[in-house]
Image (cartoon, rainbow, N blue to C red):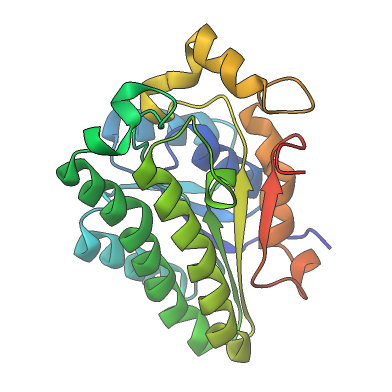
Length: 257
């Protein structure tokens, strides 16, 4: 059910955090993974860590804000391997604090920052789906997995306006794309994490006070670790998800319940 051996996989934002977890679980299970990130040094170290274990990974420095470079990296992966089986559209950025602080209230939101978050968190996700789907439609198979957030499912005072808005938009983008691509046996799904201990927002969750506030919304009473994304990521990339498409699946310790 969970066999992804020799599957060709493309992951954005793979140098650290959830993207690294997704790349690692796929490589650990025999997939051939192209890891991409804007952080060249971090990406090189992350890829080397997996290669040193004998895993089949490659890396490409990609700024997802540059849509032409993003598309070229996806096309190159498919061309070199003759196919593209799985795409994880994971890269994204924080929009800063939410309306729970004065800096995050709507009158303090910079439109330049808003536009940058929309471009990276929404437009680049659309382009990742579109570029990956171009190859998957030809082969009549594929999995596209988007990283969203529980902030896109309901309001959340701890995250910025642009972040919440783009994650909500991404969830509907997943539903829309899943309907078009179902005819080609391409599954499109979204993972909606709750608070995970990652480097997003310059490692904001490493601040004990911020971590405490996020922990308060989680019934399990703690933040998640990156390894806890792996099971769901593998499920949605594997044959086990053959009848799952158009879903937004929370992984949040019960927060949205």
